Image (cartoon, rainbow, N blue to C red; front, side):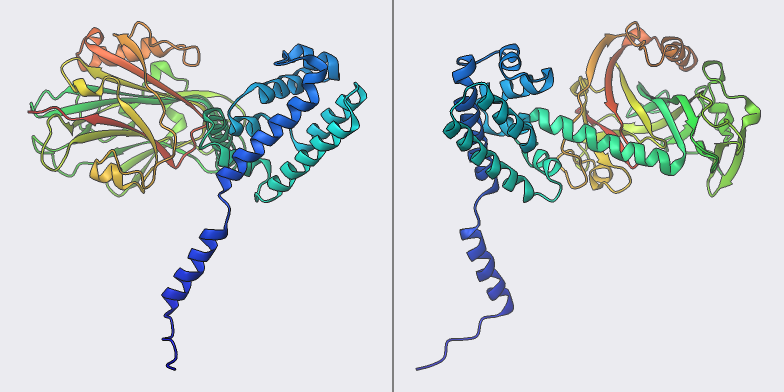
Length: 425
């Protein structure tokens, strides 16, 4: 009898993985079953005391629970989605206290013990996640929109706050707008007029002087079809201080210093400015001429404009302002959050490339035509600032559609990418 041929390493691994796949239970199915059991056990426990579909106040009064616990328990019992039940559920310790309270209120011991058994299974399931409840919420975020939003916000805040401590700087608000205007030089091109700045930027400790702006140094004048970094007035002068919108900020000229760096001239705050915990406001404006294509080609179906924070801020406000003669398919524009600097989709202009993309897509809210609704409580001088930009670039703001996106705690290292479908020629 001949010996069976020896399996290759790849065949051995494939066989092992196939066996594990066949025997390993599906996690989402386990979570679904756990949510159903948890909801059923809480109904069996509470409804004899409060009636079917009790209101939060009834639950709180019968069991002497605080408002938060009674609301969570009520939502957990009434929601038909098992994943939402798990997300809304109090921690196992909290559920144990609820069971004790129900038993004191008259629930039979057998019912209470059955609920304790289910809670024990829930606690065991939580123990299988590396980060316990945080890990569970992360898994549930694929099925529960509210969980996904809360998970992302919590994660962004943790990263943003950590970056603040590492850099020693933090702003209350970062504002950026991209005004898309037809090129005055080339019909096939469009310009981006960018305004950016920080409100209530504070130094948290003595540390490095942060770069707040940089401008390119041109060794020769760009060609007619070449992109060019200009002032709002169309000047190629490389001095970044010409981009400073000083009338809308609080930074004196002597608090800024210039540093050459390759083809750029960087503008940074002085080492002793501002003092620790002294809030400052700073804004810049510039024109990136001929930087966008207007029409579709075989190589490109989309253009992109991306906004990347350099310093951490609590609130990031992004306005996309589009001339009425440009990009009708980008009303409203689609936005994504990308890992800035590592994103092939930005380089290849493919909106379906998700390689370096976060899983949530921020929404652009239309503010109508013109800038009459552009003011916001976080940036009280915004209407005057954007109005002055339009005066300098020579366009009527009433000819523009305005879209706004607000994101809390977007940390440096990520960019908001605005996807612009190109027109047919």
